[in-house]
Length: 223
Image (cartoon, rainbow, N blue to C red; front, side, top):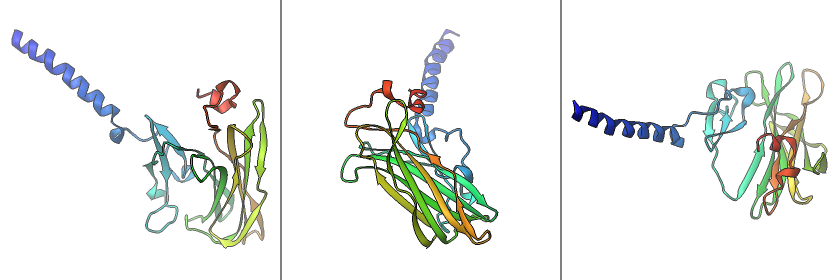
């Protein structure tokens, strides 16, 4: 009886250690709690130190497909940072606009910038080609409010299924964000459709860590 108890005492800690090791393994970590579905296409979430992005593009057709939605790991580059937000907007009865602004901090030749990509889809998730425009506003946090660093205004291209525009984030060190919006011609309505704004989270762009005491509200709430 004593030998059996002794064996149990040895095996039990080993099983607990193995269980905890499996939980800590990134490859076995479950995906983020947020549902990966078409309205969240492009959404990035961090889970147990690993960044994931919701991808609903069918790799074979290049179209949005609800059946293709899955969480994909985002490659981590130590010298670069990105804050991104994707907003899937139902703008007309037979078309959708996917607005994807991002703010990027690159150590190297690319520099710091905010950009916006606009993609058009039909109700069956197929890509649409229309006259299309993109606009991005790069903002810098002053410590009490957001100040416009650069406003691209509307930049048009025709016809196309996607369009993007970029502006530099070069108004000094601190926290930045990007606001993105899209505009496209609706054949059914015979008019321009303008989406709402999609706004990224704040990103520190500075040679040294930004001062959290001067951080915008979205940073303070997660600090």
